[in-house]
Length: 415
Image (cartoon, rainbow, N blue to C red; front, side, top):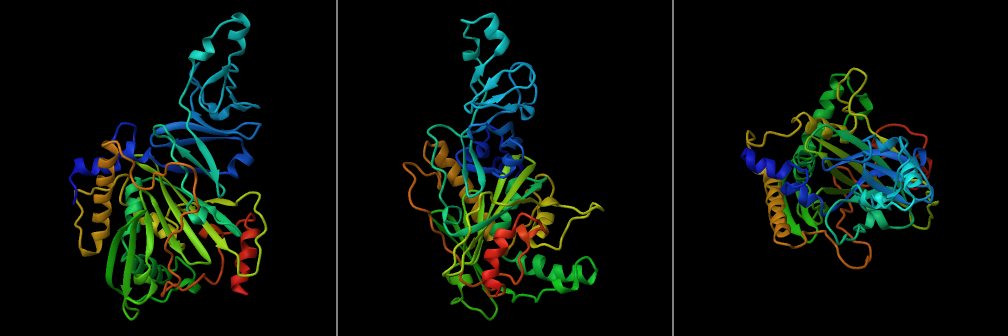
């Protein structure tokens, strides 16, 4: 149990807070690159700041303050030009650093004036990787964008699912340190939903063996989660290999054929952008067609009746996180033996915050020239969910016409 002061320290993410400053040391996915193909500007809220993401006509990406400093209008309605984003109200234009580079009327009246040089809004570095656009909002020098192997591997197809969650980022990430919930929320409760007629009969699941033992080991990139299920033993990959939680807000799960990375991106204190990217590796001897645009999908939380959608595994997690409230009352929780991973993760957050406050780099902040892709542990078999699923559902969230390239790759495993 945490008291309210301790809970605030781990959940509040605005500028100047402990967690806000820690999170500003990391790159965060804020959109699918395909979104800017459809519209060149997008409103973004990240770590409590209102911003506009844009792509100018030269292809340069920018992330700057959303409100124009002239008359405070919303620049997400602005006009992308060759070298920046122009305010639609009076024509002032800003480059990707947030610097004002044109003031049409002011320059006409005062051709030798330097007013525009004095006008600058916040501008943050952005990079595209694996069909996602990442942003960095921290101090200089800017660290490397981590080349996690699922994001940087070749001969793969990818698929992106994005969900907007009305709850704090920490209750989403703590779920990754909770192995035992899988047998109850994702199997036992799923079958209960089928009995009530809320999900199709064909989705009834064979209950997995119960957990007998869980363990968590710190490693260079975060924590490895391990489990022993009844009848499988310590020689099984679930214990022998485990799967990683990457500090501070990523979970990797899957199999060698299909890997999922989940990012729990803090929008503000009470909202999270959940970004999942699926990487499908080609079967041996096959080549994946190049994806010009990685398909993406915004996953709805609730149905037309306002009830949580619960016939998809991730949505069951979303329901559990959101119903804890905008910020979970950790001062009222009663933790047990199954929660030791959560306790370990909270301790790691405090330790890495102290390193940052002492002037050091917390883990997974990479300096120097980009290196080789960063490989991570992956469980060759899952025991109760061996290999790839038998059918492919784009982005785990329903049909989409944009996923034919992923389906072709996936078919090599389903033949």
